[in-house]
Image (cartoon, helix red, strand yellow):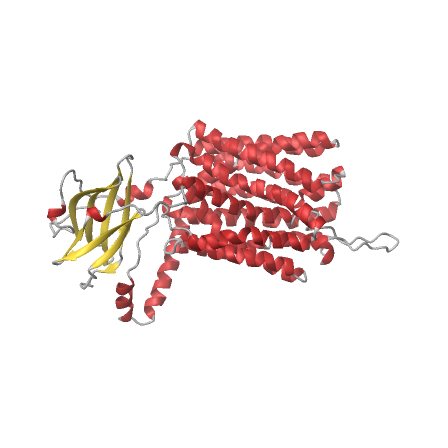
Length: 567
């Protein structure tokens, strides 16, 4: 059954226009359905709150219902529930404005990838032990020298974080529906901080590998939640640009990691590079526990009422918990099925996998390849500088271009395919020249083009699925590009180099995979696509037949302009 009433009340720009109550077909009571309008905006937010069994009659006298960032007291009076619109008030101003939130996310992302770049440097990763024909052996340097790692084991070390990322990403994405996402980020970043300290204290290959696995847990808590928040809070005309700024921190972080790892590793030792990273991340781990909660589009911010839950579960045995777990797993399965049925999303991720297999191997083996091919004395600094320039110019340029073209999924695929194709041409050509200066110029142009994909590819991931699936979409995308992309590519390139013993040939073979990525994204241009960013709100607004029942709110409350809503 469904009841409705019309009210009007304003408070600092918010106007409550309608509220409903009733029982769904699954016998769960949705207690309140409220639409609110911001006076200066034309859009609306909808929330379904307070899941309480319909048979429970003794409701508490005061329940707090969250609407966006506001809380409405619902009072029980003579069997009816009433909202006092005059009690709606804005929360205290938050220091975390959208721009400041973007800065926080960008810094966290950059520190995460500084670690990824640092472990690939000659100062931290080092070089293996080498024996000459006269049986004169060098001790090697860095991690590879101290633990006597082959190129294959060294490649595994670069990919070990994927274990933690694979296990933790779906868990964090699912928990975000019921737990404050910032607390989840705080937990993940705390694990990340302890893990990099463990890397600095490691004693052999297995100890550092386990710590690298735990580093992936920290990234998992972050990658699935940051992009949806940015997409929600960015100005509509600049959404891709804001995403571009965020993802610009990936190549920039790797590049800064090259410089940082080279300087700290050579100056203080490779272990101190990890200790420094832990110090950088610690404040943000703490921040995750104190930041004010924000609501993501497509996610209900309903709070479960402890009293009602306790009363409900006290009547049940342990089978209730088994049923709850089963329902959660069933919902996850349904979400995965819905996600994988989106052809646009799948094609986008497949192209992203091929693309990232090259980028990941570049980031790990690049300094060593450059040192070997061009006898670069300071390969870490040169590769770091080229990657910083290419990452910043390319990522922002591609994102701004998509905003200027009109941010649509077909336009995003056009940028992805064209930029990747010509980027592959320039990068491939760069490795064909023996001159260091020609290589640097061509490789820089190639990197600018290939990094132009960062904003558009994540725009497609966010807008090809309905809002409630965005955290899972980002989690599965990130897991996929790692587990099928850079995770196997780094050790495979190591095996290839062990066989060929020629870094130029290995680099050319690796770069050719860019053409595959461009071809897959080219297919996406012709797929039927719909931007599903607003789909959840449209679904919530669907009307049904309303029987005549007692209104949720007293009719005395209604005054002025009013509107009705239905569910």
